[in-house]
Length: 282
Image (cartoon, rainbow, N blue to C red; front, top):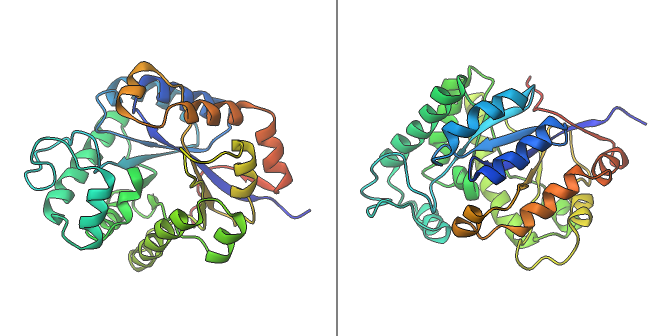
């Protein structure tokens, strides 16, 4: 058998709640995932940072740019006039129509970046976005420029681009994956122009509310034909009272957490000749 390909398994939403953060740390400590993305808009970030540093090792710890549903770190008179960021559908409509207030968004992303660096003590290993907002027109160029500036060629940007044929073969939320992936193609082009690394291939998208297959079955599809430096997104965590109040994704986080802790997960990686790890930089 040939040498295994490297796959980045990235848990989104670190710092969303203490329960989510604790679950992600458990998986990092057990070497069951290899990256996480931090929501620095969360009031829990400062309290959860030290515990993350203690277990991080060589994992990629990145910034999860947040422009939906939460309270921004700065005043945003155009995007969040009432003090709360818009829902995902509204932001996407404005982004696709190229009506996002770029200067205001850039200031907010810089504040979220500052909150990461000042608390964590290092620049983010990567930058991505809550609800994939970092890929939208009016946002992606800002994110790529910031990654180029802060990382010295080391900070990578998540691309959600994947070959259509592979999306169809996997057969999981194909329409949703296609929309997200088409935006990722633009991110990859911009990143190449600026010398910013990206992952090679993307999986992990599914319908949290309607999907009836087991998470293990879904993972078997997500791992199909992963290239070296591929990325699989996930959302594990312990569900707690606060999570139920602010996010619709609750029980599914517990399901994902349990699967990644089980013996079935490393066996699935072996079966697909994959190893998890941080992104290989050139």
